[in-house]
Every structure is written in C-alpha cells, then in structure tokens.
Image 1 (tube, rainbow, N blue to C red):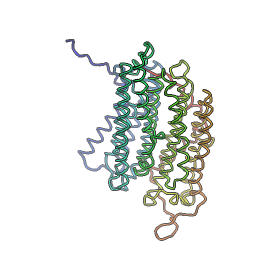
Image 2: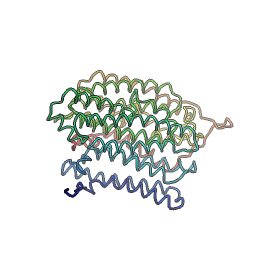
Image 3: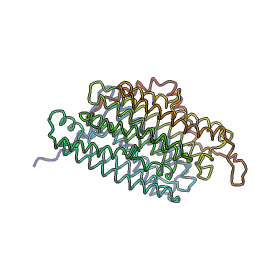
Image 4: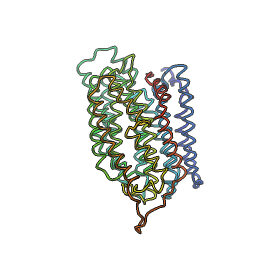
Length: 505
C-alpha cells in the first residue's frame, strides 16, 4: 500500500483559528492549574487573544485581495473575503461581550476562566462555520458553537432560570442538529460528496435522476430546519424568548451576535454557494420563513414587558430581515453577477452584532443595579439618573428601528434595496411594514427611559444609584460610536463588503 500523505496545511492562513483555539485551551489549562487570577485578568487575556486573531484576519484579507481566494486543508476550508469578514465580525463581538462579562462574573462571585474559554471555543466554531467548504466541517463548527452556547446559557449556576434556559436550548438544539446531520447525509446520497466544490461540480456536470433529485430536495429541507433553529426563524423560534431571558445577559448578547452571524454565514455557504442550481426550490421556503419571522417577531415583541424578552422577539424580526437578504441573493445564486443580497447580509450582520451588544450592555448595567429586574419599570427615570447611558440606549434603539444616520438604517435600507433590485416587491413591503410595527417596541422602552418617573428602591424612595463598570462603559461607548459613524459615513463599510461575493470552493 502507498504511504499515507496528509494534506498540505497553510499554517499562517489558519492563524486566526489557531490563535483562538490555542488561546482558549491555554486559558482553561493555566486557569485550572493556578489560583484565581487578579480581577480583570481573565477578561484582558481573552480580549487580547480575540484582538490578535482579528488583526491576523485583517492581514489574511489583504493577502486574499492580492492573491485571490483559495481553499485550505485539502479543500476543507474556504480562504476568501467572505470568511474573513465574518471572522472579524465575530471577533469584534467577542471583544465587546468580554468587556461586559468581567463585572458580571465578579458580582456573582463566579470569576474564572471557564466562561472566557467557552467564548473563545464558541467563536472558533462560528469561524469554522463561516469558512467551511465541506458540510461535515460545517457540522463540526456548528457543534463546537452550539455545545459552548448550551453551557454558557446555564453558566449562572445559582439561578434556576439559567439552568432551565440551558436545558431547553440543549434539548431543542439536539433535535435541530439531528435534522441538519440527516440533511447532510441526504445531500451526500444525491451528489456523492459533502465537499461544497464537488457538490457544485456534480450538479453542474450530471443529469440527476428522479431519486437523486428527491434526495437533494429532502436534504435541503432538513438543512433548512436545522439552520432555521440556529437563526431563530419562525416557526423554529420557540426556544429564543426563554433562553434569552434566562441566560446571563452578557451570554444573551453573545448568542444574539456571534450565534446569529455564524448561522447566517452557514446558510450562505449551504444555499448560495453549494446549492445554487436548486435556488428555485429553496428560495420560496426562505421567502416564507422571512415573512413569518418579520410578522411574528415584530407583533409579539410589542406585547412583552420584560426587556430581554422584547429583544428576543426583536432578534426574530431581525432574522427576518437577514432572510430577506438571503432571498434576494437566491435570485442570482451561481451567476457571474451575484447581486447585492450577500453584501447587504454581511453589512447587516456587522451592524446588528455591534448594536445588539450595546443594547444588552445597557440592560446588563440596569439589571445589575435593579437586583436582576429588567422589566420596563427598571428603566424608568434612567434619563435623570444616567443621561449618557439613556442617550446611548436611545441610539441603539433608533438603530434597531432603522432611523436614518444610524448603522441600523444603512443595514435595513441595504436589505430592502437588494430585494427591490430583484423585484421581490412583496417581501420588501412586508419588511418595511414590520419595521414600522417594531418601532413601537423601541418607543415603549424610550418612553420608560425618558418620560416615566424614576424607579424606586425597596423603601419606596427614588433610586439614584446606578454604577457603570469601566468595561461595560467602554463597550457601550464603542458600540454607540460605531453605530453613529457607520450611519453617517457608511461608504467605507459598503465598499469593503463588496468584496465578499467571490467565494472559494
């Protein structure tokens, strides 16, 4: 027998992944073998690791711009601008969430390396999902992300609602992973490969029989179920309100940003890149999921009183907007001119990730000072107690509503424009109506912040104390600045994102 020859590994091209996974393992091992580190050191190390990986991803972006996209590790991973853009998006989210987590863990006397290590492992899984050029590799990234999120959701061991959220997420996530894996098996049965490049070549060069065609269509349906759960699209959204409410607020911010970015990156890889020849089959399903998510998410959000549940249903509505971008991209999937759907998607993911972390950062600060209460009553009089914090929250809420001169407006306008360019007028109109409905939700929060009387402490006296930790303050300030800068000067981000539609496979 000939000797085994392993695949060639471009180590520097994999450096962001190696730094993240190595940093996470080192943090866990050293943290387990040493005593408790000085306050803030776990967070500082984690942010440094994520920042280093982000710098390396930016260097990879520059190399791809010069040399063009390619694949890595015998075609297992794509080395293209799309993967690097999502990598940078995920790492920015990790840094912002880490700034929130330090004070939260210290207050609960749970400071340690475990949560930070899980952040890095989850980010590694998310980046693998964004760069996967093989469905099995994508599944491995999905499981790395999901398993870390299950544990993170239940990481507040002293709170029963956190344990409940972790259990619910684990049980339902297990079902969705099973659907996804079975879908991969059927795609393999219909095309003879799980490698995205070979799947495209197989569908392009052969005439499928009825049985093979049925296998691929069934596989697409099961993949949509699995990925629909991960992005919290209706009707696969039922886990979202309970998990968002029960999980520690920094973890909720992590799920809403990193989890959503990774899952939508996977949808692009599976549908737009791997299965463009079936776009007329999967695009109507995406259309339906988008409409249901827009309508249900916006309508149910406005009747909530818990702000975390409000933002959970709001995230479902945002998933609907992102699915509108996928539907627009589906019109030209596989063509030389890919349209603006994927460009609008990645801009939306970056803008939404930053502003939703900023929103949850304010919720974290308010909830910590209100003994965990994050209902609308806890936000009453915030403008008189902390005007700067109230102003930052208003910026984030305006951005989520899509008000001009914020990143949210740029993101929503790009998505709706992409739909209109493909003449998907109906879904564009539904998206605009849903945005108007959702604006009422954000208005309710702003009324509590600016127009309601001050909240009271246990003695019935106005509560004037509201401490903002340094880390949370930095995260809020950075997120607010980014939201406004992109809203006022979006050209640099749009021009940067236009490079993401050249895929390696």
